[in-house]
Every structure is written in C-alpha cells, then in structure tokens.
Image (cartoon, rainbow, N blue to C red; front, side):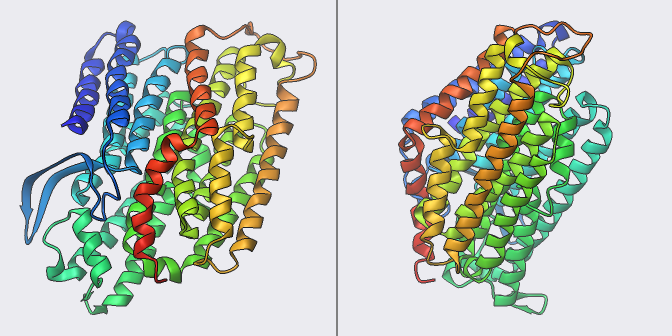
Length: 509
C-alpha cells in the first residue's frame, strides 16, 4: 500500500492546501510534500524488486485489485515498481518538494490554488510511473495535463494563454492518437488478452502479436500501432518536429512549473516509449531503428542549434531539453544494456540538471526582472551564490566529469556506438557527440555575456543576493547531480536489472 499512500498524501494534501489561506499555503504544501519525499526515499532503500515490471519481474510494493469489467476486458487497480520506475518516482517527489520551496518568492497571488495544483500534479505523476493497467495509467497520464495547463495559463507570463492552449492541444491530440492505437492493439490481440494489464498485453505481443483488426492483418496492425504510439509519445518527449510547444510553455510558465515540466513531465514521454514501444515491439524497433536514430540525432543537433540562437536564458534551457531528450531516444534505439540503461539514467540526470538550471534562472529573474543575456553583465558580482550554482548546472549540461550528465552521456554513447541493432551506429553516435560541442558553445557564450565582466544591468530594481530558501533547493539538486556523477551505480545497477529482460526479448534481432 506504499504507492497508494504516496498518491493519497499528495491528493489529500492538494485538497487541503487548495482551501487553506494564501498566507500559509506555501509552507503547508512544503510540509505535506515532505511526506511523499520521505516515503519514496524509504522505498528506494527498501526496494527488493528484480527484473522488469512488464516481463515477469518481481515487483516492489505491488498491489492489484479488480476494479470494473469493460466488456470482455477486466480493468484493475494494478500498481508496482521496478528499477526503471522507482528512480522516476523518487525524482518526482524530490523535485516537487524543491519546486514548492522555490515558489515562495515568485508566487504572490492565489497561492492556495497554485500549491494545490502542484501537489495534484505530483500525485498523478507518481501514478503514471507506478500504474501497470492501461486504463489506470491513462487516467493519470491525462490528469497531469489539466493542472499544468492551469499553472501556465493563470500564473504564466504575458503570452500565457497562447502557451497554455498550445501545450494542451499538442499533448492532448497526441494522447488521443496513442490511446486509439493501444485500443486497436488490444482488440487485435483477440482472446490472447482478457484485461488491460500491461504485463498481459506485453506477454501477448511477445508470444505472437495481434491477429488483425478491421481487415488489417496482424503484422501491418503491429507496425501501425508502433508508429502511432511512437508519434503520440514523441510529442510529449518532445522530439523534432513536435517540439514547438515546449519553448513557449517553458518561457511563459512560472519557474516551479518549468521545473516540473522539464524535470518530470518530459520523462513521461520517454518512459512511455520504453514501456510500450521498446518493450512490446522488438521487431518494429529493429525495422524502424534508422529513422528513429535519425530523429534522435536531428533533435540533438537542431535543439542545440536553436539554443545557440537564443538570448533568453529560459528559452536556452528549454531548447537544451530538446537536445537532451534526443540523447535519450538515441540510447533507447541502440537497444544495448548501456544504451537503454544510459537513456533511463539520463531521464533522472536531466530531471535534476534542468530543474537546477530553471531554478537558477528563476532566482536571477526574481532579482533583475529580466532573463535576456544581452541586458545582463557581471551578475557574479551581485549574486555570486546563485550564479555559481548556475555555472555548475551548465557544467552538468555540458557533461563535465563527476557530474551525472557525464555518466549519462557516457553510457548512451558507449551503448550506441557498439549497437548491433542500429545500422551505421558509429555514424549516428559521432553526430550526436557533436551536440556536446554546441551545448558547450551556447552555454559558455550565455554565461560569458551574463555572468562575467563589469556589472552594467540597467534596472529599477535593487539586485541583491538571493534569500536562503531560494538557493537551498538548488544546493540539494547540485548535491544529487554530483552524487550520481561520482557513484552512478546508486541507480544504474537497479536500472539495468530492469532493462536486461527487454533486451533478452530482442536478442534474436
């Protein structure tokens, strides 16, 4: 019942905070968020699962209760954690707590509703990573969209309505495409499945796949479903050319929403790709390996080039996320232990680093009321601590050794270079590695303009050092980034234990 407790605390907490007075909402939400954070850390230390949740693995904190009968198919409350989902649950709870703390300065209106929605997002994100029945999973998946839409649309910047609607339309249409594809797959599997439990569907797919549906034969249906689901999840990641909603959403969103959006919500897409496409469709993964790798490399290079052309610090970090998610896709399509394991490690690492970067940009914006690097100079003289953390985060993005970004990229490149599934694997890997050079270029350029040199910011606001509650969350994230960089085995062995069964099913490809 531990997973249920995590979700319940966040949901009940959201309701309590939603009706609490504004003056206490921030502190109350922070106190409530400490409970899921502490519980998830305990679950991490007590984790005794093994293998993969969809492939006969021994799940931790598993619970399955029959819910409703939908025609010939049963729907059940089915949750559990393996080495892929548990690190993402811990990431969710920790980032939520830190995002709430970082909100105390910038959020000064309708605090109760804001913090209530943040806790509501946390509950649904935990559900996305823990649910093992498709319908339950889809409810959590869709429920995340509504509070994020409201956070952007109510507390965002001048173009918040445009950004919120664009975010909702893109991601909701993608969800419908994915939903339709999965339902067609279940009907196509016929008597091989009697429920929407993901392990049962995965087993049926690996045992023989669909017989056909609506006149479409089985192999064609499997390919169509694979492509439709990939497109649906690719929007959420996002990859090029479905990335255009992301910069607008990030730029207009308040800082805490950006932290959760980049830190966790983007991982919903890559997590779903791993769970659905890369676990259930090994033959289609092999058939579409080259196009998917091309999309990954284009996302890496194009996202980095777009970041290079920006002068808004927040937009730079946003486009950096497009590039980083390209690395995740490359690691997945490599279909090796280091590739897929590194991609999962990168999900966690990017969540920490992007969260740190958005917090640092937010702290600077709170003090200066500008994010434009062309307006800033010598910020290190006025805000040395916040700027120092921003520089450290940038080094993490660049893949500096002893930071989690280095470990993640090393795993991905090592796994991709030696891939036997992917044709021209060394070429794709070399092109993706070139993205590191561009990343270093735009980050160093931005830092050189904004941080160093004489202080010359012209503003009506007094720029002073950030308060402790603004920098403390960043120190926590920086400590985790270094910890995973120094000792990646803290989660990597857990991850590979859940990844190996996926690769075993594709062993003959």
